[in-house]
Length: 517
Image (cartoon, rainbow, N blue to C red; front, side, top):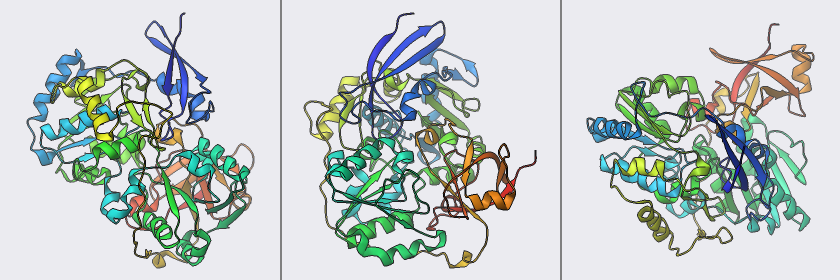
């Protein structure tokens, strides 16, 4: 069996690690092998567990072209999709693409396709944040920083972010900074087991407000945090306020590979917001949805409820390389190519414009055949024109950010009403597996005190309960506060800031029980 080697990019997170991918076709099955690429400037040959296990991601079941469950040729699926979209008013349509495996060129094509139908409900997952912050601070959301800025920082504050879990290749850059003399402070609910920080500031769940009392600790630092579609607006406001009031810099990592590209090329394309679109479907106002390379139910918390809501649509069009839980209810499915086969570019969190290394234009042309009908070269030239670039090089920072001074009002959290309650708090520690629909761990972390209280022994399981939601999991003992439960596995349990928007909580109240054998 002959294997073809390609230089490629890992789609696990916004770092965009370089790697070599070996592919072989064995009958109808695709066999993938991953090798390190030492010359990659993003990761210098290193890969996290998701990167080394990338074959699992690419060996999933392929999505076929279909109309109402019947397999058809792609041309027929595309033609049917275009005709059915014409039957809806612009406000009844929505377009969603979480930017894990979509190229800059596909983003431009997707935005253009939505505009062909007059649709403004377009979401790449980050739209709402631009409404909630001063325009002068938008560069922090829009653009990242080169890793060289991390390595030369003199003081780094990890703000509720465990780099070894959330973004493992970031941890290497922080360790280099420490070697260069940087002081690292971790602000968190629990100590990091790997002890990357020189100082740990532990915060009680209901006392996030007290971080403001330690404002001077943040002075002249590089604050590193995370922004996801589910980040609470008050928590973002807190990070920005600390940045603005202490002459610091804020570096926000994002979970999706081409988040920067999606923001650069999709910003201003519409008024869409992921949660608002789902709510619009639930209310019956949005009747048709075009989903591009996105497992909506798998990516979102409370996936079963999301899937139930999406099943209410009159029309669901899914364009993807692989099947998702919603493929069975999609009215039309359009098969695109796996990410590593794509011809196109992405912008990583540092601002590097990276060539994916593939040759296929299949997904792009599916959208262009419904829209303007442009060639790949035409769309690619638009990408370079918008970025002001003539050439592409992974060794250059193509997208730089211009930092501006801004003012931010001191955020006020409304948490008094649930102070004093007893119980446990669940905190998700997201990672590339979490966001890409692959379950890598089936346990939660709990404290020794919780184990003793529940009378747990090796081999037992626990139940994490939130109202009618219940998850049965294994457990691991970690050095945690008695009240805290940590999970890297996605469950049906919703964080409070998802269930109740505009609250500062990063955790949610749950019950913890010993599961019956």
